[in-house]
Image (cartoon, rainbow, N blue to C red; front, side):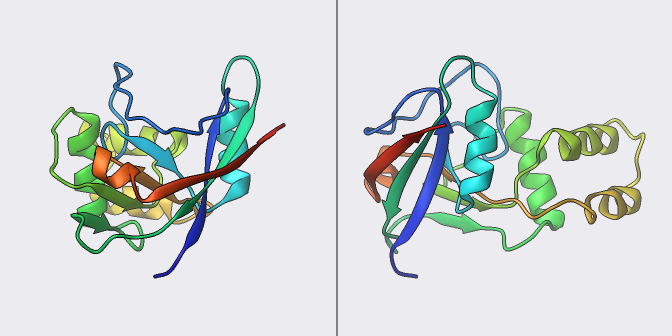
Length: 153
């Protein structure tokens, strides 16, 4: 994979990405989250208080990093997200794959609590629109990003 443009939705311009630990666990753990989908980054930006800013970055993959990529929602993806959302750390520099948005997370919680079977979970999520996220979990992973600019919405 060559160079890619990634987007990050925020309430500020982020020329120098950092890994912030914000008190709650996310799909792929603590890190700096981006997406290939500009429209999705705009949705992220619009959920922030204050301004809505979409930042763009050039991403040049580094094969020396420990990368986990989920091509689609699968059993391994589900288990990984449940672990991360429960605070279990991993040793990946970068994790990439579909996003468990609020609706999907509600299904995951139902599954974890035993209210939704594994089979029912997969039936429910197959109707969701495609999502993408890539999480840069380490400082060396952040070095694969070059800030290209930002757009205020």
